[in-house]
Length: 85
Image 1 (spheres, rainbow, N blue to C red):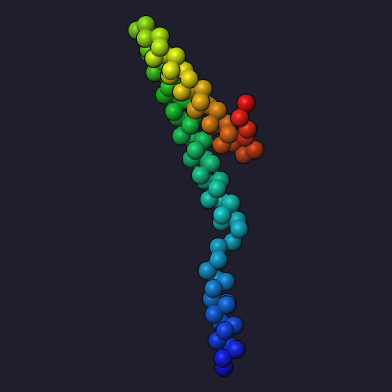
Image 2 (image 1 turned 180 degrees about the horizontal axis):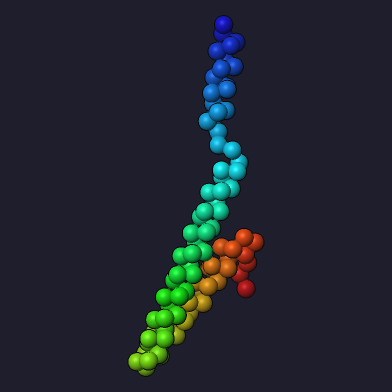
């Protein structure tokens, strides 16, 4: 009776372990969210830099362009196999 109980406990513990694929899917979802967020930030920064340009806010335009470039690089890094330039 004692050895059966031990085997049952191991089976119960193993059933709680998530398959490796679940972990990979979670990583993929995180990368997708990171990429989408970075793309969105890049788009906003670009639009704001154009707005700053129309009002002669050169330094602000420059900073927004830098933010756009960084967001685009972050989106590329979040791509599967993505690397920074």
